[in-house]
Image 1 (tube, rainbow, N blue to C red):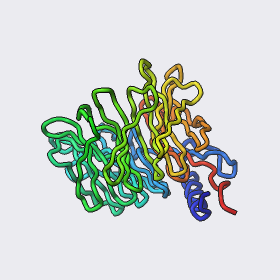
Image 2: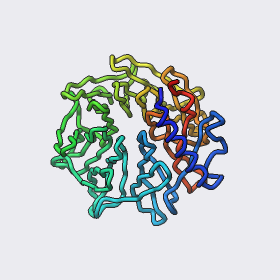
Image 3: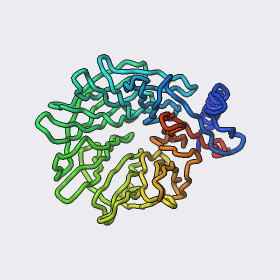
Length: 350
């Protein structure tokens, strides 16, 4: 059940933001309609705003492209203030994950084009880092303690994984039978330090989960030759997508901590891409219909799938209150960020 003060704070914040926005930027439905509530947002003058992650205080991080086609990072606060940032000397900044405290991690590029990881603390101070002997460091996920998981390309070639402790110590690791091939892949770390991701072996592309002690479990849904985990929650449930042997489309899955798989597709989907799972087990993502139009979706912990009401919505993350962030195209050359706020205050303790 949701905490009443948090619900009131969240609801008040969304109402205030909606009042301040132009009518076209917010849905006409208010919280009293007991319907999801949408807010659109845009980095100032940016033709492309792409949220990547949201925390439980409704702080969003992501990236945007300015009018000169340069990429930057941003943090958007609950009442709508959007703060742009780049690491010193950096460009092409791509924040990918934010934790409950507001610390952000991601990737940026230096003047020579080399990719580095970074962490931006809640005060705005940025620390750059690289995995040892790395030519390309991709920091992808940060948990509440400040541990960061990611992948990197070694100077001699080959892709490897790392976890960076809150004090900055980097531990490299590889799943068993990893061929070290391909670009740095999606990696997610949960609150207890378990990490999920994918790797390539002689038999295909597989998912893995690594526990905080360093033990690995390799997994695939039945009949999969390509498994792509995207997100792991605090309880150890993992969501992602997979491709069946001999087929061309992706299908969604959720894997329990005990290793049991449930596969799913929204009705009418020919390609399903789950991207994020919250503590309750709600999953968000997107899918393509037969005409390859994009639709967002939310799947509740009981398996019920609801398409998002915003046309063309491409979700990126869901927080523990069920608030979804992502982007959509308002016009051909104008991508905006969005928040989808559910009528969560009907779910209070009494």
